[in-house]
Image (cartoon, rainbow, N blue to C red; front, side):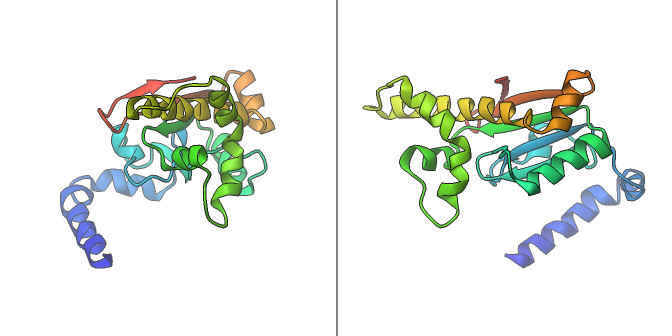
Length: 193
């Protein structure tokens, strides 16, 4: 598998890097992304590709379930750096369809770390469960999963405001905070929050 990755790098060098040498030289001097995206680790969601972005435009943090944990020093560091040092103008929580983390949340995640991590999305599940939706057909199960995926995005956007520098930048108009949903089925992105 490593050989496949290295072969891919050779293709990148020939088809992109050498043709866009000035762009990559400019990136050596620093970065000034306009957006921080907090997305899911899912390998099917290539953030830069689905937004048609170039290297250097988007600062990315990924974790299982696109979760914004209120006490996560890893995420806190990324947020602080993006908002206060890089000066991004927007922070986006990006969720997606067929999310394995949300499926695990619905079914009860297993493992050493996964169940504890998914506790950060528990309020979204509780809300969706309170709707008492039927799950008797595959279509109904899919509808419930989609609702949970979107509700989780809304919850995580709310959690962003627990970071004082995010709240302050947003209230001052320097930062836009949004929640978006990517459909694996048709490639579209819709605004949730």
